[in-house]
Each structure stands twice: as C-alpha cells, then as structure tokens.
Image (cartoon, rainbow, N blue to C red):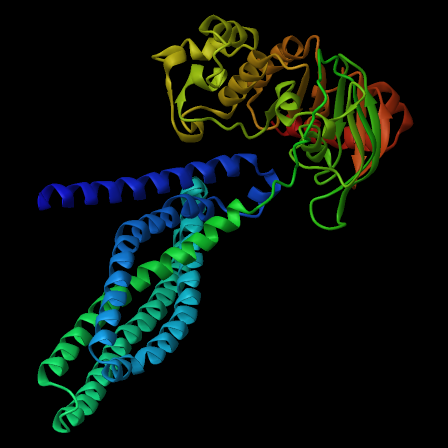
Amino acid sequence: IGFVLNYIQAYLLQYTGQRIVFDIRQELFTHLQRLALAFFDGNPVGRLVTRVTNDTQNLHEMYTAVLVNLFKDIFMILGIIVVMFRLDLRLALVSMATLPLIVVITAVFRIKARQAYRETRVRLARINANFAENISGMRLVQIFRQERRKYKEFDDVNSDHYQASMRELRIFAIFRPSIELVYSLAMAILIWVGGGRLLQGAVEFGVLFAFISYLELFFRPINDLTEKYNIMQASMASAERIFLILDEEPAIAEVSEPLPMGEVQGQIEFRNVWFAYVGEDWVLKDVSFTVQPGETVAFVGATGAGKSTIMNLLSRFYDIQKGQILIDGQDIKELSKAELRRNVGLVMQDVFMFSGTIGENIRLNQPNITAERVKSVAKHVNAHQFINTLPKEYEEPVTERGSTLSAGQRQLIAFARALAYDPAILILDEATASIDTETEMLIQDALPKLMAGRTSLVVAHRLSTIQDADTIIVLHKGTLREQGTHQELLTQKGLYYNLFLLQYKEEFQGEAGA
C-alpha cells in the first residue's frame, strides 16, 4: 500500500508541476503574440527565450521540490509546538526563544537572496541574448574575423553571470550555517534552563529528554526548508520576470467593437499623420496623401526619410500619435487588427522563412490555400521555375531562415506567398533591393501580375523600377516634399530630379567601368 500511495503522490506531484509549467508557457507565448513590435524592438530574442524556458522550469522545481515538503514541514512544526506547550509551558517558551532570531535571519536572507537571484536571472538572459545574436550573425563573424571580439563579449557576459552566481552562492552558504548556529544556541539554552529545573526537581528527566528530542525534530524541517529556500528564491525571481511580461499591456489595443471592413476597395488616406518611435523624436511630421483603389504609389527618399515607417503604420504594427490613417474611409484604429492584416499583403527586403517546406512557406498552413493554388501563384510570379529544379520541388525542406536559398529565390517565394493570400492592398518594401539582375528581370515580369487589381504601395531604392507608378511620393526627413508622376517630378527639378540624376550617374559610371 505504501508503494502505491508513494507512486500516486509522486505522479500527481510531477503531473501538477508539469501541467502548471505547460499552462504558463502557453500563456506566455499567447501573450507575446499579442504584443506590438515596439516591445520586441526593445527585448532581445535570447531574453524572451529565457523567460519561456529557464524561468518556467524554475517554477516547476518550486512546485515539485518545495511546495509538497513545505506543507508537510509546516504541519510537523505546528504539531511539535503544540506537544511541547502541553508538556511544559516554561520549557516550551525557552525552546521557542530563538524563533525571533530565525525570523530575522530569514528576512535578511530573503532580501539579499531575492536581489542576488534577480541579478543572476538578468545575466543569464544576457548570455542567451548574446549567444543567439552571435549564432544568427555567424556569417558576418567569420567573414570579418570577429571571433576574438565576439569571444571577449561572451566572456564578459559569462563572467558577469558567474560573479552573480557566486554572490548568490555566498549568501546561501551563510544562511544554512546560521540556522545551524541558532539550533545549537537553542539546544544550549534548553539544556541550561532545563538542567537547572531538573536539579531543582521542577521537571522530570523524561520531560527534559523529550524536549531535547522535540527540539531536534523541530529544527529538522526548518533545516529542510532552508535547503529548499534557495530554490524558492530562484523561483520567485523567475516568477517576477515572467509576470513582468504577462503584465505588459499591448501597445496597440484591440477595439472592443470593431467595424466590419466588408469588401475592401483599397482606398488609403494618411491624414495629418505624426509618428515617433520614442517620445517626440518625430519620424513622420504632418504627412498627408491619398491613394485611390487600384493605384500604384511609390515612395522614395534618403535613408531615414520615413518610407518603411509608413508601411509599418498601414499594417498597424505601430500606432500613430496624431492624425488618422483610413482605409476606404474607415480609421484603421476602429478595425480588427486580424481583419486589417488579412487584407494587407507585405513583401519585405529581408524575407523570413519558417522551418518546413517550400509549399508550407507559401501556404503558411492556411487550409483554404490548396496545393494547386500554391503551384498556380508560384507560376504567376516566376517562382515555379526554380522550385521545379529542386529534388523535392514544393516539398523541399527549408532550413532555418531559408539559408540554403538565394536572396532572389526567397523573394520570389515571398511574392508567391503574398499572391496566395490575395490581399486587396499590397506593400512592397525594398523588395528588389538586394537581388541579382537575372532574378530582378523575373521579378519585374511578375510585379504587374502581382499588383493587378490591387492598391500597391512600393518602397524603392532603384528609381528605374518605379517609373511607371501612378504616383511617386518623395519623403525628406519625415515630411512629404514632392508628389506626382515620374515625368512631372523630373519637370519640377526638385529632390526627385536630383535623386534621379545621382542614381543615373552612378549606374552610368558603373556600366562604363565594367
């Protein structure tokens, strides 16, 4: 019977701990999915990975190693106190004389230990962040021979973590002997007072012996608790950091009663828009423009002019501080984020590829996108040609971030992905900036098919790729400076004209040099 009961206890304890950790991880992941991009801009990947993995595991250790023994030890301590007071009130009070000292030592240790464990968790997160960054940038590390510098950086953060761990160890190393010292002091006081009363005949030897035994039993669970107290403090530090994330409010609030978008025509209006990523360091200043349904509008300007910011705002990755952004006359803040993004397709310069297959990266596991649809859109954007040459074609495995594919191939897959979702509004953010000439020709051939019947916003570096746009908007230091067709802007001989001449000169010199 004892074996069965112990098995059931161990199983239920482990099951409960694992279930709690599972639920916390699920809640963390779900909550992180709801947070705005601004949160991820300020939190390295490694730090967030630490929260979801190491910190939740610490909570599991607290549930399985501490809580079950905590209740058992507390009941044992209370039972011993009751028995001691029933045996002899005076000796019981003498035995409990050191309790305030235990409380003081524990309180001091709790304050010191919590801070030490908190610092250890912070430094562990820095190790994970540094390591994740180093692995992600391994090509740059090796090509620029940065191994020694990156080793020094990792050595610094690893040493910081080691020092924090040693401070934590020193604090705990003092705590346990302190409790042992209090136990010895309590035993000495009991023997001194009890022995005196025994000589006076005020107490029987059996009672004194019982008190000595009970005092040892009293301190045994206290010693067990001190042994587990470091686990509890580590878990509390981890819990603090987990709840800091769970308490993080999404910067982009979902409206309680969103307006239905209906069939999206694709009219876009920016009305006196002001936006800053931090404080009042304005990235966009009083920007206003209108895009009619089905139009193609290109955005040009120097780096930092605000081109990509406009695309991020239209997708509502960030919220503006002043003004309005409207789609078909509806403020996007009044729309469901999910429905808004369902109608906005985004193709960026840096295409992200998930682990899986080529087909899965186009479909993104949407059940309404069939294999035939995947193949059809791939043919439309000229991606089928290279996919067909792969050993497993659309079932070809994709490594992390698509590292085995060229930049142009990833870009073509991104085009196919956008077309498969059939959005009413299409955003191309520097989509042809870093590809070879041959792939660019394929993309230039695919673009009209991709943009047909859609409102398209294009951020372009090469002005030659956007000359046929219905409207070209020129941004400069966050303000809209010029607007018109390619020919109209050349006639004005303003910023666009200068950019065009500069780029034409560079291309001409490049061709002459070749």
